[in-house]
Image 1 (cartoon, rainbow, N blue to C red):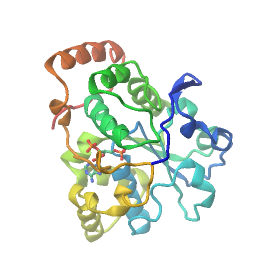
Image 2 (image 1 turned 90 degrees about the vertical axis):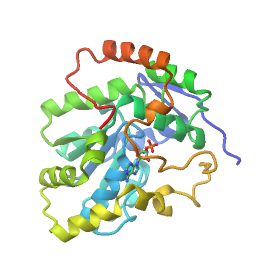
Image 3 (image 1 turned 120 degrees about the vertical axis):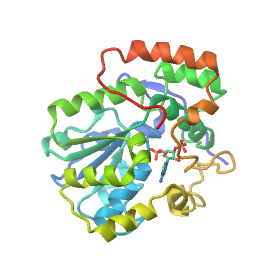
Image 4 (image 1 turned 180 degrees about the horizontal axis):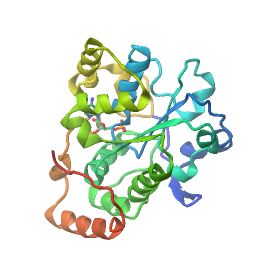
Length: 273
Ligand code: A3P
């Protein structure tokens, strides 16, 4: 593969790479429409899963509108436009707030997020070399990740929710526990009322095993910057896989640091369901 991994650098206080900031002016000047729907998350929180659900809810089809990065927005012909982003809240283009767009944020517990991010980074050349696990974990705790600190990201968006009523906050763990219940809440936020059959059909097609074998969702076969021999994109889809990665010592250190970083936050995560 002739694609070189980028370096991390500080971009307005957030660790980023050239691939994630190249079209910055275009992103910042983006003109939102009032009915745009934003799907926001820190990387690896289940945003593909959520996008897929929204795609089916709005368009009934599986792969037309997902995977459109901000840079491709101009080409999005549909309405509403489903727009995915991993930006921290303070870097979001102002236009989204001015237009009072609906935002769905999905968050996932830190331990499973870092494990998922690690495997993703191993297979994705658009991201810096992850190096070995223990060093990766240290960098995660320091926020030296593409899109910055997990702690700041989730807290920043959580805080936004207090002043911005059109933000629906979801948790990956809740989706794993009961996707039907979470879809009902999502639909009520979006003002959608799918029939029972429609809901059933969507739930069936967004099951992990269904999505794992769907080549479009997995990007496989058409993204040269990903190495599917290293890891698959839709990987395990579990709550608690962190237990297979963290040593006892790493877990203790992580918990202590977590307690310190999250001490002023009212956000609660589950690391098992
Ligand atoms: P794992 O690496 O832990 O398996 P994102 O889409 O935001 O990059 O998040 C990716 C994570 O969501 C991956 O986690 C992936 O397997 C999981 N995921 C994707 N589709 C899923 C589904 N239908 N059910 C459960 N988890 C899913």
